[in-house]
Amino acid sequence: MLRSILLILLISFSVKLHGQDKNGAVQFWEVLQKHCGNAYEGTLSETASNDSFTGKKLIMHVRACDGNVIRIPFFVGEDKSRTWVLKLEDNRITLKHDHRHEDGTEDKITQYGGTASNPGLSNIQVFPADAYTAELIPAAATNVWWITINENEFSYNLRRIGSDRLFIVKFDLTKKISAPSAPWGWKQ
Image (cartoon, rainbow, N blue to C red; front, side, top):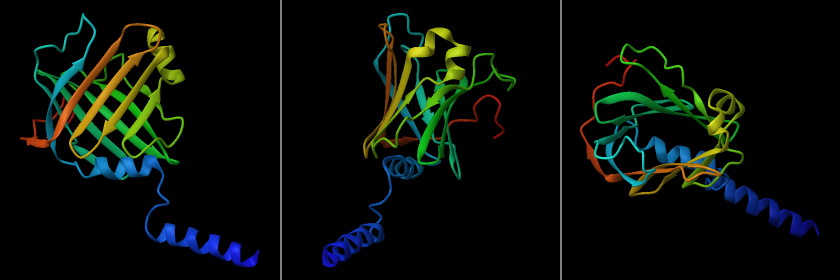
C-alpha cells in the first residue's frame, strides 16, 4: 500500500515537473500569447444572410498582452470599433467585446460577452453569454462564443442558440500581415 502511494506521488511530481499540470485555459493562453504583436487577415466561413461584413477586409491584431489581459482589435474594412478583450483569472478565460466610436468613447452596446464555465482545452475556449450581456442585449442571452486556435488558424465564432445566427471568421496564422494603425479609442 505504501509503495503504491509513493508511486502515485512520484508520478504526480514528475508530471508537474514536465509542465503537464497546466489546465486547458492556461495552455490556450500561452499559445495565444505567442502571437502578441502579430496581425492576420481573416475570411468569413459562416454568416447570416444580413451580414454587414461580407466583402470587407477582416483583420485581427493581437495588439496588447499585459499580464492576464490580451486585447485583440478586430477591424472590418475601415471600421476600427471592435476589440476582443480576453482575461485569464482563476483558471478561466473571460471574453468581452469592447466597442468604441471614432472619437474613442464607448458605444452604448459594449463590454458584453461571458466567462468560460470550465478550463476548456488548449485549442478551444467556450464563452456563454453572461448576465450583463442578457440585460444589455436581451436577444443575446442565448449567445455562445468560442475561439479556436492551433498552429495554423485562429477562429472566432458566435452561435445564438434557438436562431439561425451563426458567425465564423477564420484567420490564417501562417501569414502575418503588417500591423494596422490603432483601433478607435487607442493611442498609437
